[in-house]
Image 1 (cartoon, rainbow, N blue to C red):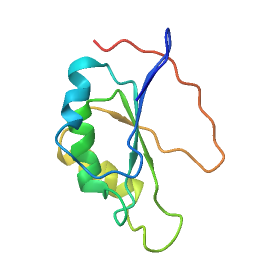
Image 2 (cartoon, rainbow, N blue to C red):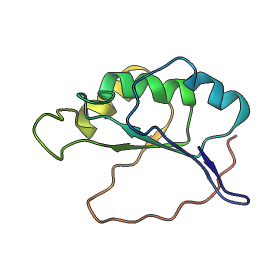
Image 3 (cartoon, rainbow, N blue to C red):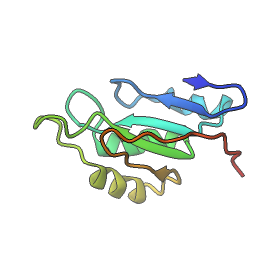
Length: 109
């Protein structure tokens, strides 16, 4: 978790799987961006990642750790389907290789 004074709060899931304590993050922080692994071999797949997003309640979810070699079968499309199925309210932001984005603090309603 990175909290930048006057800036966004970012949660990077690293190479973790879904765990129930993720729900505690939203009790103490408004998460602006969640970087969530979706590869489905060494980490969460799309279904577990969507459940993690539902627990953490970030404003934006950015999938990562997928598509770099064949064993990582999770896709942003599958992740998007799982988010919709769970009615997770995070905005999905899929980045292209080499893309950079600017993160700003956005107050949740």
